[in-house]
Image 1 (spheres, helix red, strand yellow):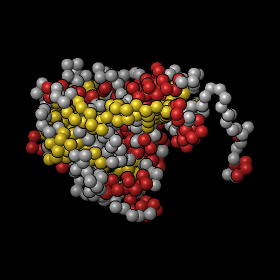
Image 2: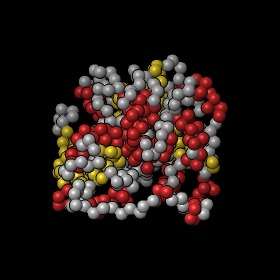
Image 3: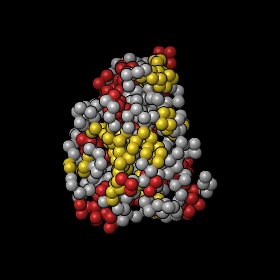
Image 4: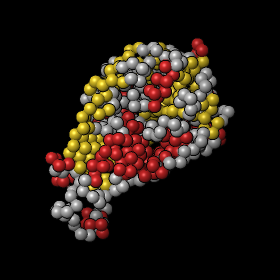
Length: 494
């Protein structure tokens, strides 16, 4: 592991990034839409300190992960491009969007308005645009050429079961209705043309695979690596099963997603991605997969999971390999940012006074939810809690606070809990709820997804906390008058 000081680390590992203008010109010569490169270009212009290019040679055996982990321990989350990867000619990019600031830049908004902007975009699905020529198919490997070992797939956490594709956005079609599903799943490297996959029971892909398997058919898939953060956010949205999720990706990108026909499967794939892996999830085959370091910051156990047979790998001539270190801020924000929209909409139907919602890093952006409301009725916060718990099965602790509490500041939330909560009146516990199989506190439940009962550890206890003050008889909050007019430089100097 790296033991350098922050200063030594900077001298050894990082150089201020630049953006390759020749690549930019080539891509923009094809069209002016959004992709990974247009985002990097914008990041360099708007927030150059957020983009760092690593010149030093790194080994895929933990070294890129070590750098990311070291920076995170210093509360730093810049986007990193590892230019010189030992044994490979493909650079690795990590920490692509590891802060709300970076997400705000990607969506052309501010951190304060990020949630609102996301909700506005999500309401306007955009049909895809089919193209004939695509950068992602400049290089095509099929048949005996297919070799996943040619990709710089890193080692991440110490006791993982092997090398993993971690940020892969898997594309599939929903049987019968033919609409596209996209979502992020972990893929373990098994061989030159085989991958293991874990499908969460809460994911649409789990339902799709179950339907294919019941018909004894393989499920055609494509794994997308490297695209604009808005595409990534769109792929993680919580939307009804019968919607086309490519159109949701277009909504968040605020432009039609350009797609091209895949080479070996009956799917369309993002034309301006960096890398696409095509293949099939085979029915009725289970192999050992895991253990794997998850977003919970704990290892998930080894499981018997499905197998993918890879039929093609396509990419740009100068592709980036996008990677993500599990358990870091980027991993947490990937899952936490898109789910806020559904929680907000559902909680607001139950309680019209809901102002905003947030899932903090401390709760792995999934298990703890803060809701800010303008309370009109005592007892009303509980309705907001019920709405949030119904909207997202991952939530275990839901805290409602008044509109004067900043839900993006945990000090403010904890102060509300400390000074406004009457536990015996405003805390309630619900046992035996559907949760997430990766939750370390999960207990055994059963699923009938494949027609036979199977054990899964997804039963959890959930807690609702109303930390709002009563509408009558509560002390007034301290306030120093005129603070908004004070200019500190007049008193403290420039």
